[in-house]
Image (tube, rainbow, N blue to C red; front, side, top):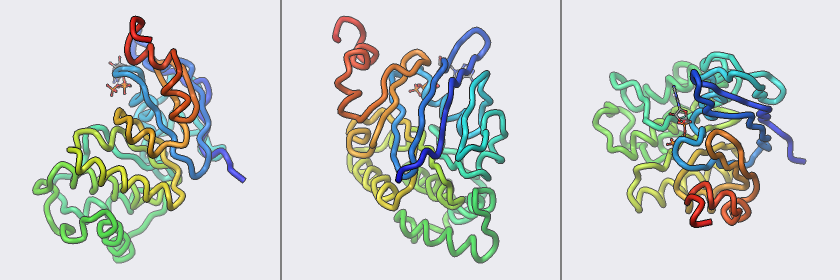
Amino acid sequence: MSRTILEARNVTKRFGGLVAVSDVSFDVTEHEVMGIIGPNGSGKSTMINMISGSFAPSSGSIRLRGAELAGKPAHKVARLGVGRTFQLVRLLPELSVIENVMAGAAFGHRRRWGHEAEHFARSLLERLGLGQATGMPVSALTYIDTKRVELARALAGDPKVLLLDEWLAGLNPTELSTGIALIRSLREEGRTIILVEHVMDAIRSLCDRCVVMSSGAKIAEGTPAEVLSDREVIRAYLGDGDA
Ligand SMILES: Nc1ncnc2c1ncn2[C@@H]1O[C@H](COP(=O)(O)OP(=O)(O)OP(=O)(O)O)[C@@H](O)[C@H]1O
């Protein structure tokens, strides 16, 4: 039976006078891939940042299997089981590829150290196609490879919920199909994933459900086919004249 793993209730985030996220609620079921989509500036990254503990909500609740995440710092949220990648890749530039991934193993949900961390990091890097690059400095990597390392680092903590913030952004068409196949393989192994994405092909082919945001509010929720044919969603993306 499917169970709710993450529950967002009436979540609001204000930056001074600006309401970036306004009273948003949704549930994420175990093993599902849920997309958060919406036009630029609609509050998607802010929502992800609140789930991962980068920002505290101004009000509302975010629970992971019943445990309150709202207001907890990012390292505690990671320990409780939320792993993430960032819209702008954040790696430790002084460290090698494998050291970056081992850092994720040390600070994630299931802590691994020393040989165990190294072994696990190596197996993840091989799986993500970076088996030959483990000792390289991250500064020598191509853009897609830095994204792979960041994904490996997030997976190294064995997260219960993986947040991908525009992980596919900036990839060329070949890299994009590799990237989509990679996320699909994570989905097939039963991971729970929340992804913020602008690439509609990826949304259609990867997501079980989507939440659509516009100006901070949730305006629709459903399968990709349902929400992408919703008049209000089309209006939010294209403007009044086109809906
Ligand atoms: N740290 C911050 N301080 C002040 N305002 C912020 C901050 N972060 C986001 N905002 C504002 O909150 C609103 C929502 O931004 P957010 O980045 O969450 O949108 P988004 O849907 O992720 O956009 P995009 O698709 O362009 O990444 C925007 O108006 C943005 O300028």
